[in-house]
Length: 124
Figure 1: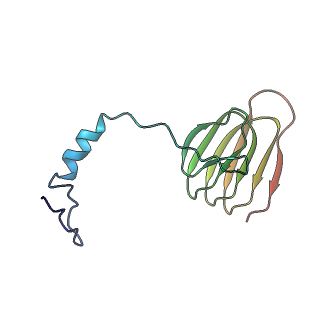
Figure 2: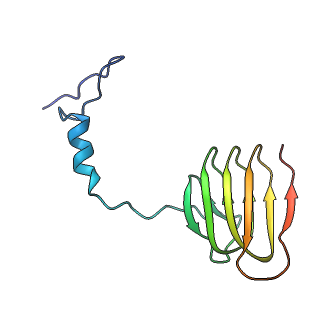
Figure 3: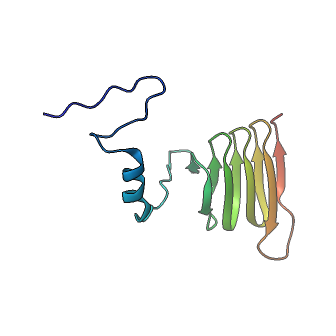
């Protein structure tokens, strides 16, 4: 039975005796999995990490911290309770953007002509 090496301060991590560089080369050709979106009982799709996501008219919440997020294809409702996020949201006319977290930067673009989104900012 092979034992995992103990990670000491300053030591390079090993995976069953394989150097990280070899492991990195093996993973370089892998296709990333689609993002996991949590849909709790509040009706929002919760995004706990950064990236580009398809709203497709669904209510979306960015619950993570320090993420770069792009929301595409016409969001109707965006809620940002997280902090220090940079968000670009492509929204439907008259959409709702609610910011309750701290130090978020939100830029929106309408997917077609119409009323600007309604803003509710209770964050700092």
